[in-house]
Image (cartoon, rainbow, N blue to C red):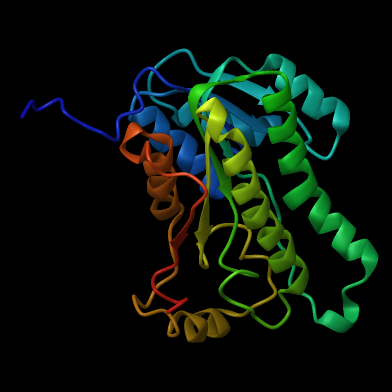
Length: 250
């Protein structure tokens, strides 16, 4: 077997990553670049996106600044996007709130970024034929609202469950175009998303004990699953939610 053989290689592929300025999105962009992909990275904060950009290996990468809750920005993102072999939809935010305080306003806020902006970005990229034949779409969802139902997680979990459901519909509808659509559904991952000051270190440590592997995930743990779904190694995989959660859902 050739030493160069690597079914997970992304060489020759152009991949757009949204939410690329931190956390899972940033790690995914960096890992994809290490495996030979040409990246278009997108986020709303120019300074933080530049931090990601400087970590990318290889050449030919580009940056696109966009606030994905803005219809105009999404349209501009789609216009600026090259033809894509891979798409990672990672933009989102979290919220922990008792159900009694889960107002319509709170639902709208979380759904606008986690669900509607993600789906609209994908819809327009499909409509404008920016996804190449054989392209792979990966939506970053969550085990929350699908396999795990934690107190205070109703809004966030519902938004991510909606993404997981939509992923399956899109996978079926886009299969005739040879476009695959999957999701990764992480457990708790060490990103700014979970470090919002709502839990103490003691509470985090106690929660970690529920995980069979006794730790939270790192962004790279999730990024490696995304790389698999983007690569030709997963060419017969579509409509699937890849759970990466240290075993907590079992």
